Image (tube, rainbow, N blue to C red; front, side):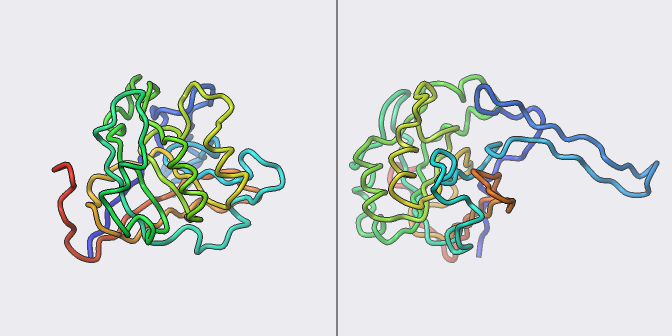
Length: 224
């Protein structure tokens, strides 16, 4: 068994969504004064590698703490769309090479390669996004979740958050953003876990996301 960490580390210098305050990691107790060390964590609920709940946009839709724990664990398939250029769309054609595994997966994770810009201004640029037929497929297939290695499932310029709204209005799907290391999961079904911090009425929360490979995976279709 091999476990792959898909999570960015929360740090004060990390990128956050434009308009959001960055996290603060403030000493709360020290070895010298208290004999132990504690840290006061201050950050928005959608900081770092995090999960969005349907309640993020719709008042009467579920919070993360309303959803069963099974919602956050399941089989996942990484879709290699690293060939998609800046400002271009991930289409249904990117799903086609994976055959029946696309329908079998409970989570679809889209590898754009954009996490290579983490910590750079380019990370907030015109990253690849899902085409609307792909979003429609996620809704029809009733997936548990969709994950991406970008800062959002919608373009940075889309203040309406159109793709979020399409998903959350109709399903209890969760959206995991700011993933990393997706290329290490290969092209077969893997076990995926993204466990959100559990707090009341959570519209979103940081997660520790991991992928578990039970057996050697095949090479990427594009030779990654």
